[in-house]
Image 1 (tube, one colour):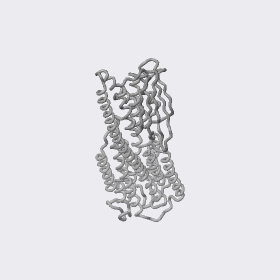
Image 2 (tube, one colour; image 1 turned 90 degrees about the vertical axis):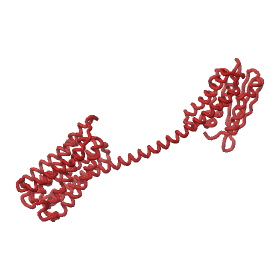
Image 3 (cartoon, helix red, strand yellow; image 1 turned 180 degrees about the horizontal axis):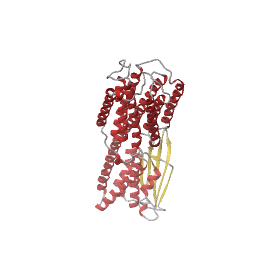
Image 4 (cartoon, helix red, strand yellow; image 1 turned 60 degrees about the vertical axis):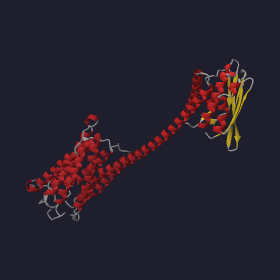
Length: 476
């Protein structure tokens, strides 16, 4: 179980303070006789029986999950408390018959009560003692709840037979219907000492919500026993009825904590399942998007390979051209990946495409801050690559002293804006006619109008290429 939160501690303190107030208020009247209510005992004990049984089931389940001897012992203690409550109710005088059922006498229910409280407090002591040693994985084991149930039922049957068949041979705890013998005070004192031992062990070794509420339950039982050990409260006195109220707290404190923790665990599990489903759905969307992008990239590669083959004069030229176009696509893809496919700065894109050819003197880049969408980035990257490749092969970047100038600006155009990019080459050789009708030139002229709805003005001057590109910018 999880460690107790400040809220758990405040609530436990509130319950303990309520018990203390009840004890202080009733202390002066512990021995005052109250109206005899025979049905009160079976009613309160039935509540405790059901609570203890549910608590035992939950603890057995938890013990089987984590493989804990300590939890198995505690579960057995709660099961013992719930099972022994049955003969205690049936043998209580006045509950179902004037002298009780099962052929019992006056001493029978009292001895069953002694066994009940001794057994439960002993299970808490054993739990707290074993709990500290279960810190290593090799200490875990698979508990047998069925074996524990059979042992507990057999033990309760044996104790019931002893106190019913041998009732006349047992030392007397009650001197009459109302008053206790000194033996009763002694036994109550021993049980009270057992409660103190359990509290000390829980304080030293406890570190969970279960341990916190076990301590509350043991404090309640200590208050219950104190009414008999120190005040000698007879049956049907104010102290007797107050002790029954304490016994309800003993039975329900841990159950409420277990149910609360189970509810919290269920909520966390439900949240985890919800997150898992969202993650699976997100993963499916990512896979679908990845498939779409891979198909798109492969289609682009296929188009580049096919078109390059038609325009190449040799295998070596073909390989060089295809490699350059694929590397250009990869550079654009890298920029998009770094921004999670949201937007790419035009300045970064231009530098990435010109990087293989640029020196400190042959390229001049100027422009305002512009963000491109993924579609704009990929289309403009191809155009810039073709311009740069043609300049490196035949234009200004192919000779010393040549220079390429790339500049752009963003012009308002109603609700959107228009990007105007200019490519100018100076100092280059005259451009051959074969370059003006190549695949690269055709791609520069057609790609921007086709994919971005813009215009391209490509001119082949005496000193190199001049290209003016315009297209409406989308919101990146």
